[in-house]
Length: 139
Image 1 (cartoon, rainbow, N blue to C red):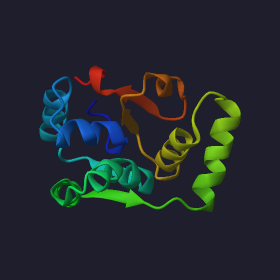
Image 2: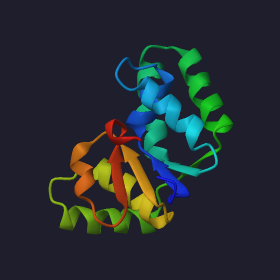
Image 3: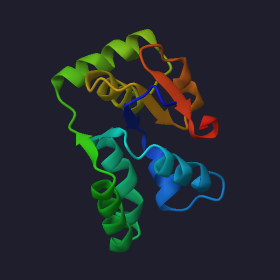
Image 4: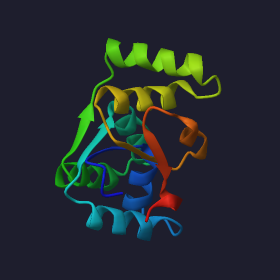
């Protein structure tokens, strides 16, 4: 994985790490430690997806933890704009079973010129423009 410099982080890997998932926490911890020199990108969709549960639970500690982590790891959050929306439409036209949210995430990664898309959605590995790997596949 050393040939990658800009990584898009989907929502699930962040959830696994911050909520210390039994199955994936170790993989994510090792990833953040090993590849801390990378540039990380995510989209505003990740912010919405992650923060929904903490707000539903009225758990401001989890909200604060999320923002502290994002700042500490210097993860750039990209807003969804018209260019990304159009790219997402093109992705959905080609990959008919991708959800709109996933297409927007992938489109953001494309527009931001990411080299790698880290997810845990195995279906997204069929996307051809950017290498997509799951947390299970981390080295």
